[in-house]
Length: 153
Image 1 (tube, rainbow, N blue to C red):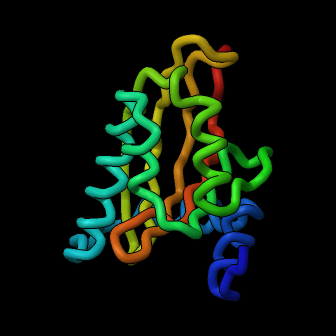
Image 2: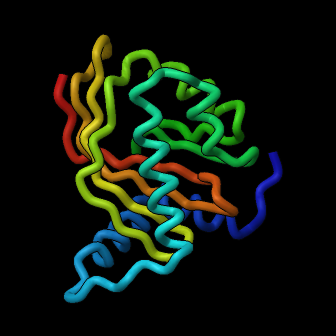
């Protein structure tokens, strides 16, 4: 798959963890700015995406992604690069997800960050607490990276 320099830079930035640390500094402004209509649409997209996981329908979940999307399940897992690779990665967990509870969300331009608790039924972990970083392009998720705060078996 061919990626533009912008996508590679953004992906390397987030994958390094530096991006998440930088974003964490943005998450607690002294005064919250109003979301632009684009940012609100991006927040709504990610909210709908997270809600879609309570019904294990791969086609529905994949409808939120661009064709050149990427997904990193945690900071220690390999990047799934391209829509087919993302679908294969999601297939490994889709039937074990009970729900995603979004605890907090903020957006800046094409980026949405949410803190979540993910609940699993028949999986090696029961709960995952972490932060998801989503980049949105033209109403679809192009990049999704999750970073772990805490997991419980």
